[in-house]
Image (cartoon, rainbow, N blue to C red):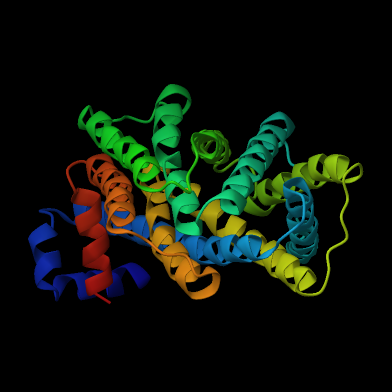
Amino acid sequence: MASSSLSDRIAGNPIAIALNTKSKATDHRAIQAIQVLSVSVIRMFWAVVFFSIMNATIKGVEGLPTMEIVFFRCVISILFSVFWLRHVKVSWRGTHTLRLVGRGLAGTTALYFFFLTIQNMPLASAVTIGYTSPIFTALLAVLFLKEKMRPVQWLFFGVSFLGVVALKGFDERVSWLYLGVGLLAAAMSGVAYVLVRSLTGKEHPLVVVFYFQLVGTVVGGAFTVFNFKMPHGWDWLLLLVTGACAHFGQIYLTLALQGEKVGVVSSLNFLGAIFATIFGILFFREHLTLGNVLAMLLVIAGVLLNIWANAKGGTGVRRWVTNLLSK
């Protein structure tokens, strides 16, 4: 019934008619592809929303060591994970322990380096540099997941990197040191994304999220023991919001990555640059020059063109638009 209803809505839409196939079997496959893509895109959108709020709260926490913030973020999030695992009656142990721990280590490392960039440069710049992660994700997915990459994507990756270099050149607040740290964070995020994708159909999304928080708690706790600084006042609320948003962001991120090609959904992170810009202006009195904006647009353009290329000339994007307009 659900497929029939969706077919009716598609049939009544001019754009959908143009994409209609010649046989019922092909129609059914097209509908399934649209459903998978649109659901994954929506999940990734919510992941970006939660992570954007988390980034802003991290920027608001001042004076605490970076690894201590990682520790609190993971401790709070792991409490949510344990609750939901018990609620759905799923064992936390999993069956692919090595890959789960590897995902946790990669994610924790990326988190630490990313938090460093947030604390040492404008929020929008730090987030934009982080959006080079789809480049590393796509490259690793080709090597280890055997996902195909079109030759033109190399050009689009170059556009994004040109934007990163331009961002450094236009903004003296972005040092070469933290630019490198930001790119390293993006690379480790790429490793984490690929490991999540490799666990599709093998581990429950909550188990994947749980291991990330578990590793982050252990590693962050080990560093925090020797360099602990007591949070004060609003720090506690900001840390609580950070952990909660991190948890729900990870849930939506994991579901999105396990539902569609890594290169497509991870590229939708560019939406966070918009949120970061708004939060930076409203809450941290940051300002953007025309050069900043142009550099950020280069990064985003390269990522968006990567989506187009990864969708085989835009077919996947047109299907997504069709589904949205047919509702």
